[in-house]
Length: 108
Image 1 (cartoon, rainbow, N blue to C red):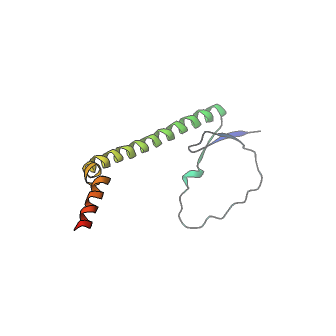
Image 2 (cartoon, rainbow, N blue to C red; image 1 turned 120 degrees about the vertical axis):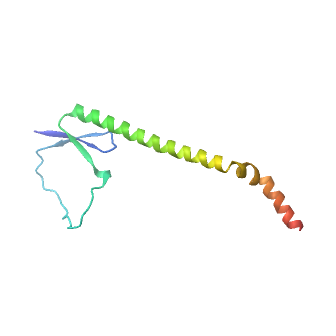
Image 3 (cartoon, rainbow, N blue to C red; image 1 turned 180 degrees about the vertical axis):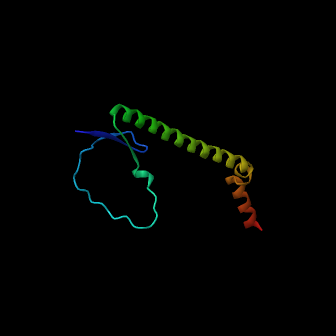
């Protein structure tokens, strides 16, 4: 029996699939409109289990690294925002300063 090994995009599991599976599938008709394949259903097929495992690991590590870069970009943006608004956050918008202005407004 012929087999191949399927690895889904950004996943670590390796699924064994029979290449001689001739069972009937429920196939939906494709419309004439142009479409693109969604990334979440993408997978790669490998004829060797060890190669499939190596590629699953490499894909997962690549995905982890891309997420770390996204987090780092968010942290950099947060730090820049804090630097841009430091004076307001640590001076003008302090709770004591707000209450002081509130008292002054009610006195007048």
